[in-house]
Length: 399
Ligand code: AMP
Image (tube, rainbow, N blue to C red; front, side, top):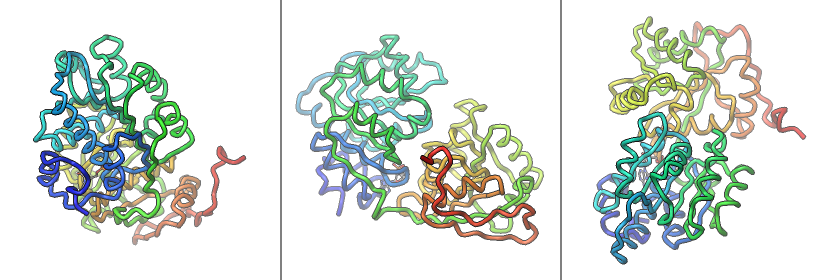
């Protein structure tokens, strides 16, 4: 199946061809026709499946067609489509996808997020912007300041809805939705469709078509997962050993805290490994620079806290390392989704110490299998991590 059979028009197909996408991914095949038909949609799809294009391409098509047919000019401080995302990094990422997919169209777009001066955003809003990609807090701020009005809004997208709820954005999202015109098309994307996500969808969305890629995902990336058990104090030595011994060229290394990130960078440096860190303690400008350097290969090893790295897209990332195993199973799934994207193969390596045992059980129970364990000479563990109980249910979820 090619993109040309999906109902997208020439300028969009040309932009897609420029990116050398030959075939739509599974989510794109399913979602694009639904969005083009004007229906509401709920889609269960993770990062790495091509989900961004699955809503951006038909959204552009809808806005472009109406613009050409009605020749209506956008009024000042008005927007036609709103994409809500959990983090500023994802806002930047999605907006940059919009820019490349719309390069042969005359639609305007802007990313809007907190933590930076709001004045440039306000200035750009004065003439109206077709598509805004925003984090909920900053968007609401702008609405309160009357820098932006929603009366011409046609489409709403909630991207990574589960993550937005995890991050406590529910009140902001509800307040935003209250301000929107009732006649609009709604799209909701979420890695997991939890009860909370369903409740949000129920309030927001009209009789949606539901698509889930959880099973039978043809474009599922090939990710080799393995773990190495380790004593807590031995992790940085182990990481240095793996980088050198296995000749890793690239790794995105997830760590729990910003202090831990800075410490690990200096520990690696002592072993002649040059790494950088992104976390909430660094400015947005520095984070963007470091991320771009990592993408271009200038930086080979990047240590990141989970939130800082969320949503950042890098095409085909070779490897992620869970230096600290995440507490939350969804985080594990999201993190490994950073690698092996859109068909490329990748590797997800986790360091597991005895106090991670419960988390490991929860993760392996979700996966439905134990993760392959590897051992390395000179790194014997004192506190052995037992083999998981695969039907493990966390205490908080037991009835
Ligand atoms: P996403 O799941 O939206 O984060 O996309 C993951 C990656 O897949 C991005 O780098 C996209 O540029 C890429 N991608 C999206 N659609 C396709 C496609 N049809 N063929 C090849 N790569 C794609």
